[in-house]
Length: 466
Image (cartoon, rainbow, N blue to C red; front, side, top):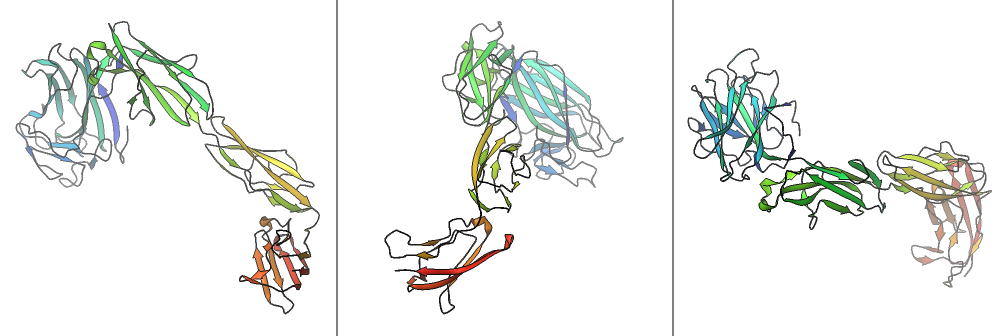
């Protein structure tokens, strides 16, 4: 249940469902902004209605010199009914409900708040909930007793169970305020629901607990098993799936037996349950009872990149630029040679010879992925002293093969007149013998290579041959 601001929530019920519950088949949220006319009350467009008035609003604040709590919708983002009690006790909510299943037990529940912000003073609401036939016969009645004041806004859920008639399942919900109006007895009402309660329905994952955690790529096939109480005379089954952790459920096409074969899926949280109803009510969703959920958690493999292959000058150190993405990852570099930390994502290394490091990452579900990076150790940086940019695809570019971009080296080339003809920084060197697209003449050029981070600088001559 979503919480809003500093609101608190609690639940008071007259009895419990001894079997299994279905989804709400009626859910009165007041989101339309209006409510049916109620005898003795008048609708008001203000969010602070006077005695004998009610409103439908998304929020109410600063009412009657702050003698009411600041109130927002029970679940957040919607609307609720706000009632300033009339001076005479009486009904303040009456609604006919038609979408129920005959001869079925239902849980009725509604959320109520005493909005008076005067602890220790004022009249306390005292409500009666009645379920009646359209003719007025009372099927079930529940009394809240006095609803106490609270120092902060607090929604409380009240609920009870009743059974619909065997022939005509239409009922009337009547909520009566038994206390008089005046200073106090002011209430908010929200989220009225009716959920079918039936005999027990259980779901299990064969050979496992009710939750299985596996990794992406796992090819196991799991058998989901459902068991309905023997009191069902001719049960009809429907397996359902939720991909939002039980907020919304959808029928799985063709999954209409007591067992379901679950095949591998992509990563995600996959919730399953079995809905059951008597076959004679097939297609009447308000009759369905749902089992407990069983869960297959498929963890995604971590995304791991150990970084580009590296070149390092003997005696120097460098940082491995690895990246990884996943849930609560734990890292391990192997082999554990010449490395500052084998469990850090970006350790410092100082190898004495060529080596390949492997980065493994393990998620909280034990899902593993790995990647490698090769580190070449050179005694010096070899700089070619000639190239032939004549278009024959052989030695057409002047390159410095072991100049790792991570060195952030600056390379500059001058012609014999001291003019700059090429410059690069932090990239692989590749000069094609042109400047601004214009071919440079054959001859001798001077280069300078500077790596500030390791104090390296080297100059020399380069011959361009055409």
